[in-house]
Length: 519
Ligand code: NAD
Image 1 (cartoon, helix red, strand yellow):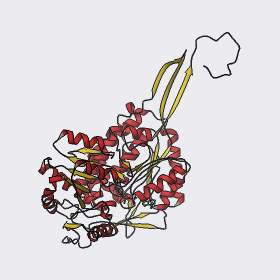
Image 2 (image 1 turned 90 degrees about the vertical axis):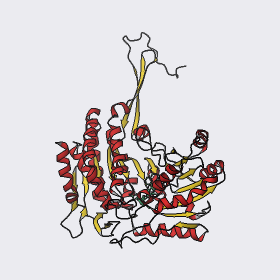
Image 3 (image 1 turned 180 degrees about the vertical axis):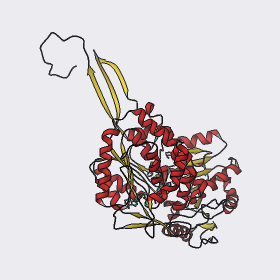
Image 4 (image 1 turned 30 degrees about the vertical axis):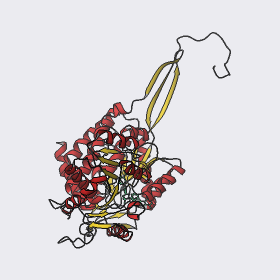
């Protein structure tokens, strides 16, 4: 069956997509439906974050290789865009089955390259799979509009049509979910898609490409190139790429937005975050503290929707020691060991940045009440481990508050009133997400109404919307107009063609041409 073939196949993909003849294996490109070796002269080493051993090497693709990807995408667009919508829908149905049957295989690759725990890696796949599932309803999502009798014998209707070649540039932290936010939406609308996965963990994207082949997706509909700045610049500048989806850091996101827009492209750019959790003293204490610890330290804090900033309002501040206890109980270790809650962070550089930010907090007057900086994991001396760390007495002027830490570090502030807490959030430049914990409906409603963030949780710590909605980060966390997935994702990847037609049974009798605008 489809499932069994896929599972057997997937076990070999890593071997096939990594060239195992070299001492250190290398990652292949995916061009025109085939896994192809790069002739690059520059390579990026990819390390297992738990051991820092080299897993594979990622090419910085040559200009010729990247041009070949665009040519393949352009060729495929000619036929794919004219393929029946039911055919494109069928590819999604099959892809859905294949991904679901192979979630744990993809998860293993994610844990190896990215470090997160296996169970969390399955969640990474699942949240991307849900986008594929939503795209199975493309036959409703891509409907246009009609209005008959716009004038006598005249009707207007609009089509929602693909743009052409699109591109996606992804971050390291969700190696399956974020590519799946991009190419399924793009291609089901009839576009073709070039993905440049994060050079730190491209394996999941390649596995998904093999599954696309298996699902009957024609060659060239999705191509994968690798690299860093040069590949990004290539995408921003190539005249045949119409739209760019980016997810990652502020620095890269703003650069790509500006460069892509300057070249006349559509760009959607999801960037960094500093998500605040507001804890009211009437909240359900246990549920709130469990959720806070999970949302601050899960995935080692490397989620753009991690709840990295806690604001205890009024008497709720007395719960801080209980939160510390809960965080201290989390088990740190390699992601493939059962029972581990917090895996390593992505790189030694990232670990250093995290520790430096913690230290800056200490120097500016914050207190460490849980210190995971010197954690040692037996048998994994070289891994990039940071244990859950909590800083209290943090003030909005401190660097550790202003900058995204992107590690297992929770900064804790206090506020006297809900108004003060809301003011703090609204002054912060980021607007990705926020959450309030309370049992009072009026308090929750006031918060939802007054807070200026794009995704709000009420007793929900990480309120990432399912794909029938869109991922609606705002302010400093998002540049662009149409968000990822959902109706906005369809809008991002399509353009409208509006037709006005006049069909009259008989010819008119006069011979006078009308030259003025009709009044
Ligand atoms: P990153 O910006 O370093 O890398 C993302 C992509 O951009 C990669 O493909 C990389 O090759 C490229 N890139 C990196 N630096 C670049 C530069 N200077 N110029 C051009 N391209 C560059 O991001 P990351 O470290 O992989 O991911 C973590 C960041 O992503 C965090 O800030 C996190 O908040 C953010 N993120 C945001 C969302 C969201 O939806 N808002 C989701 C996930 C991650």
